[in-house]
Length: 235
Image (cartoon, rainbow, N blue to C red; front, top):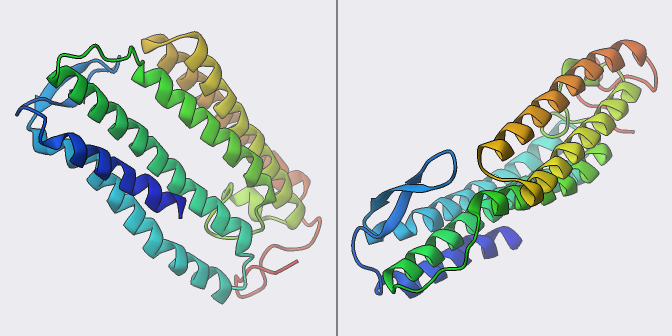
């Protein structure tokens, strides 16, 4: 499973370099520009891998629980579980990238090697953007459920409203992802954060306003999403 592979790789990398590191050599804090301004014990080289392992454990426990709950409530499970699994994998990927960069930069510094000039901030936004693009393409396929998708009141008014809200949510996430890729390629630092943050906030506001509009326009079309007991109705 991809999530476990991403969880194990940072541990292997950290184990390979641990004995070669002097104490107080691991970067532990950075400023808004992703510049290191704090250092810690070499044992902290395992902080990222431990966090990655915890995420893998939590997702592995949560996934079957979510699946059982969806089936018990009569909800469509396939697309919902795929979105949930991809969310965990996306988090693992981000942690793996951060851990890998910390391990590499720490090892290079300890051995007085010239590290590659890697802009951590831009790399993370590029990875995040690609993940958002994938999720944006999956979101419109989500069936009515109580776990994933755009879960706002307007989406549950009717099946037609649900479909339009999920499609709009997919477009919004796709746009946010594309913006992350563009700013990662073209700019950096505070400017990157400002442009992306402003664009993401605008997309979310427009999406929420549209969900209210869709809930009113498509009310009653396509049949109800839930039955009288609050259970989701299968198509």
